[in-house]
Length: 307
Image 1 (cartoon, rainbow, N blue to C red):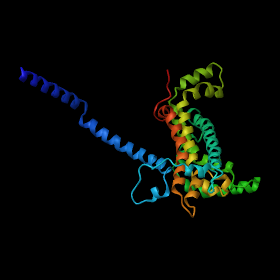
Image 2: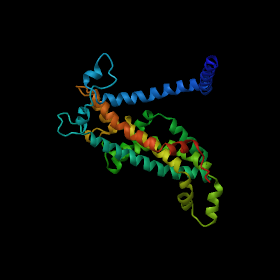
Image 3: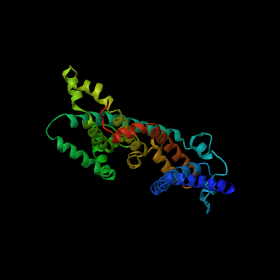
Image 4: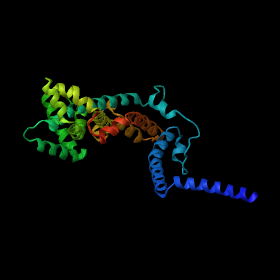
């Protein structure tokens, strides 16, 4: 009787082991290890940045790394935002400057890209292929190669019309468009080509103008692509450093990347303040990206055919 019960228990244990073994294959194990590696490599730097913003200088600069701050100190954030702090950085102005250049850049880039990419995808005109190839060529140029001709061109236009190129956020928006508009045109052109032309032709036959077709039919179908382009261009303008560093000299007009670089190069370096400013700069983009992830996935991978 006891032997039978013992055999039954062994059989149950073997069944449990067999069930567990069937769930975990070698392929699944390798996938889990790879996924864990990528998650740790992505999330740990962000955790280190946030945790370092609450550390002291000794904890950050010590020989042995401190993974968890001893206390949630807010001195770094007070230095950024508290006017009563002796080292007040007035970081709120830099946040507002970044918003003033990144949001208009995204909006203007989407509007211009919609008109230009729709013309390329739907209309027939001479030089169409040349225009598409020119867009791709411009997109392949690194930004550092364009900064000198852009500065020279804008300086001449400014001398003629009467505006100053430096310390001008409007000029900075224009330079960001030179970087973001080519890729926005390329992304939207490919998406508009996936939208069935028969739908638009039916609307034109019903009496809609071309602009009405774009507004009532094409744009609603292209919402994922529009969101993807807007987020992409916003991220470029939000994080851009080189053009802002060249075109801005006034501390009152510095964007967040320039201000962070200024704090880092201070004669008395304060890495915890740099980490606090970097956290404030990173979190809004992460929240925006995660909240609109559905549209981003559809806009970058899916077609435009609906229902």
